[in-house]
Image (cartoon, one colour):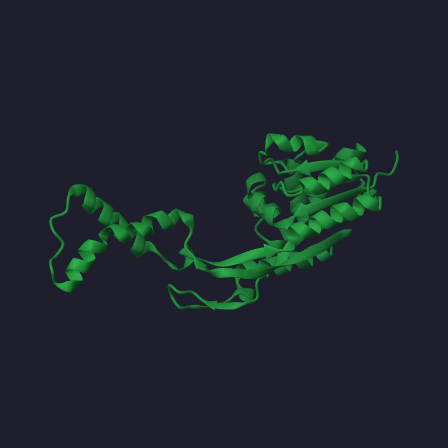
Length: 271
């Protein structure tokens, strides 16, 4: 059996988002299980390419691996006050940030894994999500009545049934509006660039003959085209997510390997 040279590149943000949809919840709730799920995903891909059974004893799948790359961004470390409650938030100490940092540490300890970390920057102030914006903007419809009430020129006139329901719904929306309904305008930077650079570098330096990219993003297309022109086999793993039809012309295969309710994956995670 010839030795393959395989590189697996995982878009970490996408991986964490998709993982609960393809494996049982108990296998994606801690940094340890998420890191192990990433390792199993890589192992499954390599075993498929080299023709090794998933349950093979004394597996030598890592002998065929050039490197396993995991891309993400370091958590935002700024401080801000939530405008709803005026609560001070140290983002570096949030549960999400601590989870990410522990996950990174777990991945660093796994053989042949390499971390490529971008950063998160503040792009804008606090934002209301789109699902609430339309409803909250309906406050404008009631401005004439509110102004009349405040100036003493009148009071709320008799409301139609439709107006009453609309007003009740708006009041309920505001009453339920809490600090979790707004988010700071944060943006990941440098992750996609690092993926593209590594695909290009691996290709031009001939460090691998097969590249597997785990993502649902189409920004990889220019780098994938370069890799394929240079003779590198390029495989996309969208973790069972649908992809656009026109992406198929830029890849050599579409393969998802982590499976919902997979006994093999469950047993390996538990062990």
